[in-house]
Image (tube, rainbow, N blue to C red; front, side, top):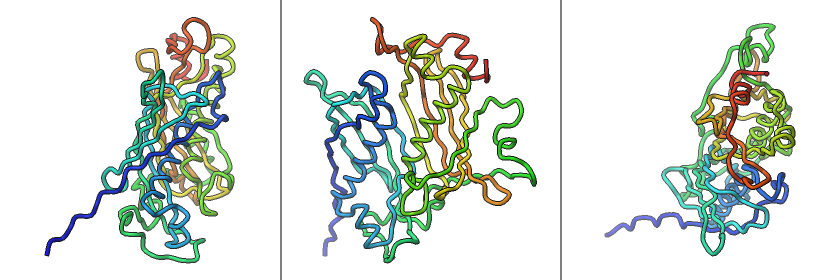
Length: 312
């Protein structure tokens, strides 16, 4: 008897528009909303396979969680753009996503990305069954087991997280925030998009702390933030109402045009600081007005020094 090989998962196509919330300067859309569209496309892919997030929770007790999303943004996205999102299965629990728009009759790719998804048992669910065969490779015993990222820092008795995460002489910036329920999934933990929001906010706070706030650079130089690459990964759960200590630091300035930065998020558990998320971002500035509007700005030595060396 001949055994037929299973059909590969069906590609998925979704049409959508970026949210007006993301048009903060002129009509350009910020990177966070690119990643929101990716999340919507992944959820649609699951539905198209017959296993949506709602059914997985209620019928299997599994929470659908994006645990890793890496994107490249080769072109701008604007408010009112109609976005075509295409999702295809990669290897294991990885998906490939592409976002494109139509400009002057031509398809323009605005995002290429890879997304890793995990199905995590939820204590708040009333039913617990194994995942459907089509997505069985996505199931994990817990979020930490799914991500494979584990890092801890010892917190000496009486020490403050600030002294451990931003020691003397460090150019790192620390921002601590309480994990609100509206950043969470399944009555429990901060979801991936919550850390995408944190990445956007910690960069904004870092720039303001260094004296080169978004508002100042916009007023004085007509510069606006632009992101060409970002990646956000979960490590361990950050539970609702925990304090998330978020560290951001610029690693390098590339060709005086872009700067690469890293975000690491920790929560305190007893005498340890446990990594719950990590992210990287490639960031620069675009000129927002005048004949050179839309072009990348060149970072002068003063700005480069502030980014890499601390306060001016």
